[in-house]
Length: 124
Image 1 (cartoon, rainbow, N blue to C red):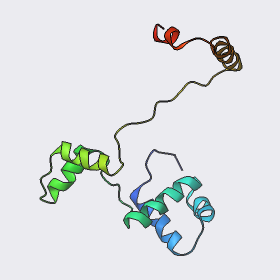
Image 2 (tube, rainbow, N blue to C red; image 1 turned 180 degrees about the vertical axis):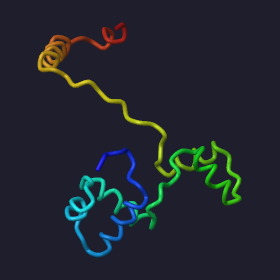
Image 3 (cartoon, rainbow, N blue to C red; image 1 turned 90 degrees about the vertical axis):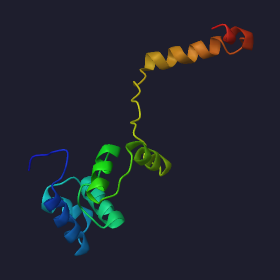
Image 4 (cartoon, one colour; image 1 turned 90 degrees about the horizontal axis):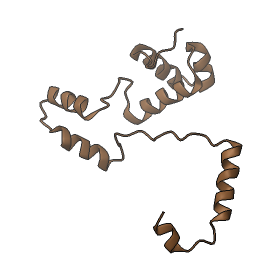
């Protein structure tokens, strides 16, 4: 089975049905050719939202979804509500790994400058 970024809705439904039947993550994973964490995520979403459909992901999609239900909401209001509920529209920045040489250089710099007064650091 070719790996894609999103699992089809039909496959997600079959995973949820298999979980309801009492099968474990590992057995479902082998049966459908999915990674165990993907199965776990599908089951988590099914337990929390009682659905396997793809939910709106951005304020624009959420606004369009609500418009279909005859609810008029401004995009900024949707974004604010998502932020207040802990859903933020940003991704953590990846940090470059430090090599052993950089770690030792950073440590040496800290040891050399540990006794510098606060006035020194204000001018840096």
